[in-house]
Amino acid sequence: MDLFDSELRVIAAAEELVRGLKPNENHTVAAAAMDTAGRIHAGVNVHHFTGGPCAELVAIGAAAAANAGPLVTIVAVGDQGRGLLAPCGRCRQVLLDLHPDTLVIVPDDTTGKPSIATVPALLPHSYRHPESAPTRLLRLHARYFDAVEDGTKTLTVRWNEGHRTGAALAYFENTEHSTFPVEVTSVMVKRLDELEPEDLDLTQPGGLERYIANLRGHYPAMPADANVEVVRFRRTAADI
Image 1 (tube, rainbow, N blue to C red):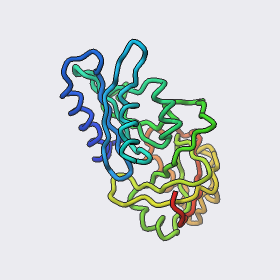
Image 2: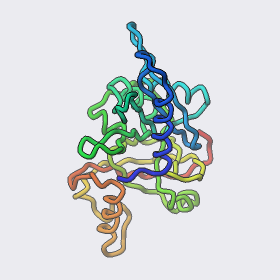
Image 3: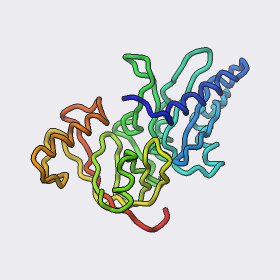
């Protein structure tokens, strides 16, 4: 999947930061994260023999200090030309508990190019801290802004995103549209190849085939037997 310009900005910010680091074995990785307003927050790792935070955790802390709210994209880059780095297990768990809907930019093992992964995909069969209550994001394409805003679009199908019922923010990818509150009213998990038109409220002939084709365009790596989430939601007036 091609990265959005906003995601390329996040990579560029981390690369610029790591290039500017002086040789220092205690600071060898830079991370950058973007919030829903398009602001980028960055940090570097702090290595110490007693244990120290990874760059991703420092960037998360910087974002919190700026009252950033939920993060939408995060990436780490190593020094000395090591390029993109996938997050360690601890960082994956922290992201799952604090920012479960952020997209993580990782190196593709096959092509070596930047790739996008959801946090649930990076941490399957995961444990979630019972007291964790992050603000959830419902990520949507910018073309759906008007339909979601006026309440005519109330259903979306997602893969590997781990949605739950409850309050969330509708976030429109790679756009200047602001977020607004929605409520996820139901999440039905079903195999992609077992979806029926009525699952998606489709009535036109060929509608299911077109829907799945569009879905595959958004998730090109999605297998035919993938478990997808049919997410129903409604716009709400209350602030989150």
